[in-house]
Length: 461
Image (cartoon, rainbow, N blue to C red; front, top):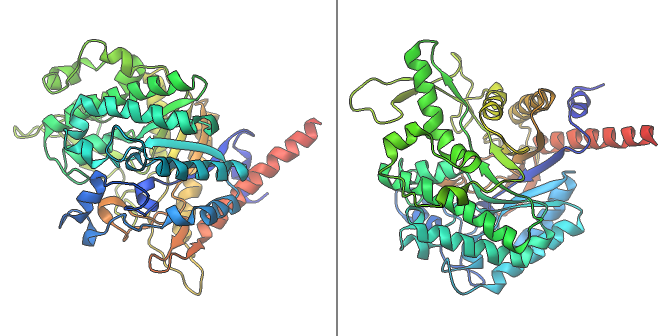
């Protein structure tokens, strides 16, 4: 039996293999059919914010090429497609008037997936906030949580009958910290008050969104996608162990505890209660029972205590996890065991529903040679991380599926188009798609898994 067959045999028969994308990163057509700008449309046009002021104006032109892109997805042999719905296509001002042409696009897309027998896993919010809402305070104000609930209702009424599962939002950590504390992502804030206000408003929006979706379609499986951090202490010194715990609370628990326990940790409250705009009843709304949750994993971190007086909470310094760290082309350390480490930690700490790995993948900027993209490093990365995913299941953690990031090379946020995560290469001048060798490898894995399923069913018969 080959290595790929051995790996495929380690996954249960009903395990879901998919690919993932996000609207602003692939759709393009930023000014067509009633869509109005998002905060990323504005941010990408500001000098110095995005590499060479690249933007999602055209991206992968998926808005016009969706049918051939769905054929491409089908050709990869996957079971499911995870994508996001662009809020500014559906409600261009964030609230109020519905843009039917925007909903029509997602109607066609979802029908196209169903025709190809692909499962539908949309995300309502993947960072493209309508710019009109930014003018009212964006994610730092409760109005946006209420607007998100209205948007959710509109989408589920029109599209929810054909969804296999729905996520409220993607990676609130990035929206709160990269966007409002570190200034790397739109809207480019560098303010702890804004970041912590966004933490609570996003948690609240998630809860309101779940309520709104279930009011329309009670049977729709609801979840959220979190990029929880896999955190290691730099040493066994008490100071470093405490630093790792503070980092866990600040990066993970600030979302996990409200969503899955209906509370904020006392240490978070002692440090940030004046910055979290909590009102009576909020935590009951936030902690709606979920049917599933998604975890995005790329790399771990190792932290040590930072005792300097000017250091702010969580008072840590980040160092390499391993001494001779292998890094990707975007500079992220590779350490596949971090995936198991964080899932084990989370299922020990919280009562959680089944999980999907909703994003995992790697940036290598290989280009075609004679029409072939031989991205062996990506194959090695995927093989290691999928082997750890199988180990997670064998350890008894309810992992139900794996969505590879990404289907195709695309707009990589502040990095523009210079970083490539796809298993399909995109020539941005011609929009030609070329399946990389990693894409063919993934297809062989899934074919081996499906073959296993068929064999076992034949044996049962």
